[in-house]
Length: 469
Image 1 (cartoon, one colour):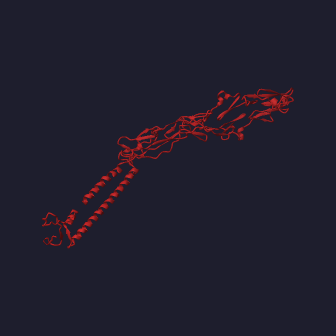
Image 2 (cartoon, rainbow, N blue to C red):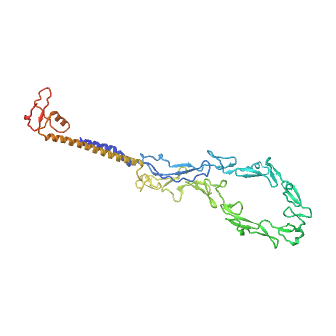
């Protein structure tokens, strides 16, 4: 009976543990690799900016493992989704205020281009609006918004030494002959010294009357030689005050700055500064523009390369590189699908690098081989070990209980056998026999009555000496 019990326990252990160990050895879940870095956002602003990242399959699953369809291998998230100048981000475009325009409301609307902005004379556009101005000699009527002439002769602003003549937008001073108007346009000279004393000067450019004397006048970029009365060129480049950060080229009466690629003149026209080609209105990149000193660079998201125009991003065909990524078959994918996919001919499989093909069963480290137990496999192993320990403890408990029961019964029988004067009844002997103690039953030859009689026997006497009570 004990042997049968142990065989049953052994069978239960095999039936319970064998499938678990088979599952640990055979089942392999899909293991994805690490996520790549986020790609560069494909828009600088607006409502559609997106960046992406991807990951590859690190370990292929077995049919009974968790399949790769349960994991994501590409994902994207919004980025740079905003509009300039208080624009509102819409579904497909920015909703701009009336003063701005462009994909991201980055461009100012020039209201002066249409009907001069409604101004009578000058329309001055500014960021986010405009205002009206008047020409010199006019002033703006704040009530009517119209430009009205200023009478400088009446207000005393003319400063004429002689007579003052007002006209729309200006005035002129007039001298009574033989006096003539000097070069300042206001003073009156006694006579025309340029004509009367022409033998005393030889002005190369212009002779003007100033403070009752002649004077040679030179144009901008030249200066007068006081000895020869000739106008000579001024070399602005020799002063070091022009074209800082660039190349200064002198011309007669003027100069020119060469700032080079990516640079331009500041508002004073004397200094070369970097031009931000990525700012709205100058950006020509299809995706991302990065301004650098004296230039700019167009950047592309992962899986794309810059085109021949150095502005437009195109899909990169990794399979056509000089050093192809795959040892055998290579399929180019779109940026949305990934980069590329390697494939192997029949009877070959991919190595763990997901690029190299080798014969099935001869790979040093095939892609399908797990680098370790997955979390589910570790749980199964832990559960199996726990089950083994519990079964072992149960077997020990049952074994000790059986040993205790056997030793107790053997002790009872041993005491009975070694007690010569002990009497016992037949019913107790039959009960011991039913428990498997191996005591022979003693029959009574005088059992002739209908009612059962109780017989007590003494063990160490011959049968003929037994007494019946």
